[in-house]
Image (cartoon, rainbow, N blue to C red; front, side, top):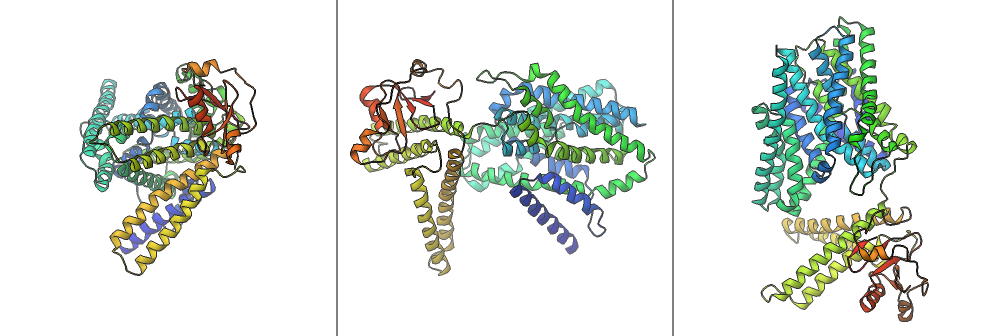
Length: 626
């Protein structure tokens, strides 16, 4: 028992250290862990734990899929329903059939076995693709398509695997297989929906963070087990429940519960995904030993591995470009993915955790099971090597560029402005009712805090890091220094035993939340200020008449700086140009707020940034970008 505990601890520590090291250096952790496991599988004194189908299907897949599902936007998922249909259903089925045909050609086994092999290698692991995509800066829609694909293709593959394994272990007709497939999908959808409503209601009944977290942690199995009990797809039930619960979470869960849930599931996903790769690598020695005893011979087995690998790699681009007319629908701005982006999408077909998990779900009685396991290992390792390592280069060569971070900042600042205005309007309604009104001092504090939040967001649009320190930056710098001193005093009191530990923990937690927010704002500001020149995204402000009228207006600036600030001896943070008369005024982060005051005095509706390299406009009337 002690020896087992020691090996378990060594396994856990290895996963954490290797995965963290890979993340810090931008290396593909799945590939490194799989390779490490492959090497370790041939070391005599390292144990090779047997992965049972029940452990994979019931223990690992539900939390892995739920962790992925709660990170995907239901709105984006609905918008990309064509991609779900083409990639998550159509491509997995086509790949299964193609691999099945290749397997029947090369293996003396029933069709059900080779179709099961196709279902195992059918679903790409979009987690690896999106991780690379965010690091190298893939277009946002491309990342969204990969994320939505990853959810349902796993469910499709597992449903196909269940159907084909039923044919392996027993004699069933095509009609029975079709009915089982439909029942599996329908049962998964219904159970997932019902569980999402139940869990959502439970979250509304508690404000306790620990209770909400506990509910969240058991949700994958609450969806999975009932669906499997009625012969539905437990995997699909988990995905549906996760999507719907995450969509309603801002309304049904407290902020602290949502924060804790994100952290907990990110940790679960990080550990389980990396553990599966290391565990799978450790199986290689056992698989190789079994393959050596196979009657097929080394030559046919090697030919099968190569043939399946090539089939998996080639079917994806052929299917994507053949179905581009359905897959590549216009987005909300009317734009479609370029051929280069479609090329990146077709290349991002790395196999990963689901393939490794699914292959160990095959029944022990499967003919040549060890050969199918080896094929799955080769496909995973090959695609991670070929596609995972070269995806950044392919994306650059095909011209698939990611979103401009400062354009994101622009949209975020505009939306924040509107949301803060809604909050201030609510404050005025509270003030109108004597029973809900607050004192003038409290009101001024609330208004000031909201104003500082918006100003800090607009300050992040400044052109470069070498500019004069903005008020928001100065506030963050000074506040972080103050918090360091505050924490030092709290820890001194703790070490001296002056205050109960419960009070110490509460005060430190409050400081940690504020510090986390400030550090994220600082990091975001540095990233945005170092980005490329900023223009308003195409199509922005199409619904605003004021912006349309001033689209081609270029008045001569009346000055090169804010004259009012100059007269008062103040320094403007950011300059704005009135597109009606050419007045130059300072932004709202400046002391005078002279651009806004100019609008209030004249009614001139639209201003443009007067900073070098920026061409975005803002309508004061409709509070919208252009």
